[in-house]
Image (cartoon, helix red, strand yellow):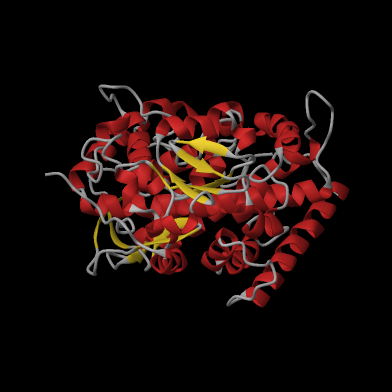
Length: 466
């Protein structure tokens, strides 16, 4: 039987400014207008030439692939993200971005992913044992996945040497991002930067404290032993192969904050949704278990297993189609443009409703149905790059996309080596857009021991080897 998980609903046709603002503040992904199912490029009447939603794959090809420098990240990202993330890869301008991307590419290469696999797998194997210790009582998989992915980040970026507390950093980042909906609304309507909103003072303190913690950490690392093979030391010692330029202390803070936040929050939410889906689709869960057992033979997940875990990876990709980690992207029109029949003035905002695009009937058959085979051997091949974009698209696609896919695939495989998940009592979750797409309440599940298979040994190194 086809399974349709919970979903968001688009803003009703003909909605005005008040409805738009209410939805933007409450749950921004629900502000995408239903007109997009027909027009695919749409500007609300109250924001003609100043704001457009774009869900047309050909127009998105222009924006993200063909002419990305004509559609930079704009006032929304500048106002919300730059104060805390600075000039990391998420926000760097074209010239600055190019050399940083060249510098970081080897750090996130497939070879690097193989090197870091033990540090990716261990936190999920440990989490599986925590689930088993609950002895059939419901477990909070939202919090568990946050802890597991944060432990991965701790091992990969910081070498698990406890020189810094990644939990404290993420608490500061969460505090900073809490009032995001207000900042989005203010940016779209060009309200002054100083306009107050709830949580503004806490946000400012969180920004200062998070950056100060990492600034002190980078200074200590530079003055200490750089021989440990973790991502932080690789970044400190890396240089642009064309210019020889290295990252400054401020660059390092920007990079580490971006990597930790983007690499932790997005993966944690996607994995929590993945477990939620497993509790609703036992047949899919059994299909994944069969593949995992066949490929790993009960051993911890290793790099050589990854190409053969194709069904697990397809499951992760379909999960991110239905629950994209970043449900909305934004861009700005550098000069006056005509897109999809609409004229936009210079400085106009473009919102890309990734969540809606991932469920658009023009691009997907049975778009609200979970279909594990969409990413295995689809008749028409893989979806277009601007139709499926959980990590963005084009030259500025997330540099950590391969790491995230590796982490999520290996993570699900490691969990299912030890446990099966089943549904816990309670209502269906409510989707909430707060920068990333999460559940408004904790996602709960019951984890039962695998009686037909044993968990792999946990005696392997739990940290990135030196």
